Length: 309
Image (cartoon, rainbow, N blue to C red; front, side, top):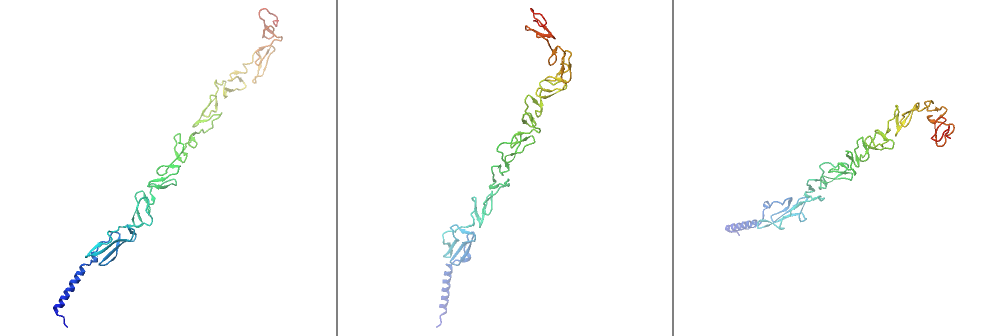
C-alpha cells in the first residue's frame, strides 16, 4: 500500500522536530569551560566532563579530582559543588617555613637555598672551619667570635698595645713576651738578684746601677785611678789602701821606718804598731801614766822618775 505523500512529509517533519528537541538538551564539548589551573580534562562527552590534577599536583582535598561538570538543559554545571584547587606536591617537605610552589620545588626566601630550602646562606663565607647555621649567621666555637667567626678570642686581654691574633694568642713585639704580652724582655739578663721591669730596664737597688744593674755603686768616689768593684768597695792597687784607696802605703809609714809596696814595715827601736806610730817604753809607766816617747813616761803632778813610779 502506498503512503500518501502528505503523510510522508509530515512524518519527516515530526522526526526533525524530535531530533532538534533532543539536541537542544545536550551540551557541546567544544563549549565546555576551561580546565581549572594545573588540571587536565581526562574524560568528556555531551553529558559529563571530568578534570584531574596534572602530574605533580594534588587537589586540596587530597585526591586527583579537580572538577566534575554535568550537562543540564544544555548547560555545563559543576557536579561536585566547587572546583578543587590543584596544589603542587614536593616529595620532601619544604623547610624553614617555605612552601611548595612547583612539583618538587620549594620557593626559598632570602637567606636559604637548596631543593627544600634546608640550607642557610651566609653572604660572606664562615671562616676558621666554622659552618653557616642560619642566614648570615655562623656557628662559632669558643675560640672565635664575629659575624663570620673571623675574630679570635683571648680570654685575658692582650696588653702593652698588642692585639689578639689567635685563640688565646697575642701578637707580641720584640720588647714583650708571655701569653698576653705582659712580660717585658731584657736582651741581657738583670744581674745581682734584680728583675726585668720594662723593655731592657732592670729595677736596681741602691747598691747597683746600669741598664742591667751590673755596675756597683760607691757612695764616695774611688780615688787614685781606682774603680768601684762592689757596693762601697774600691779595688785598690798595692800602693794604696783605705775604703776608697785614698791612703798611700808609702805615706803611712812614719818615724823613719822603711815601707815597701806591700805595706811591710820595719819599725826602729822605740816604736811599734802597724805604722810605727806607737812609742815603746821598756818599763811600763805606772800610776796611770802613759808612754809618750820611747822609754819616756809623762808623769802627772806628784810623781817623777823614768816610769813615774
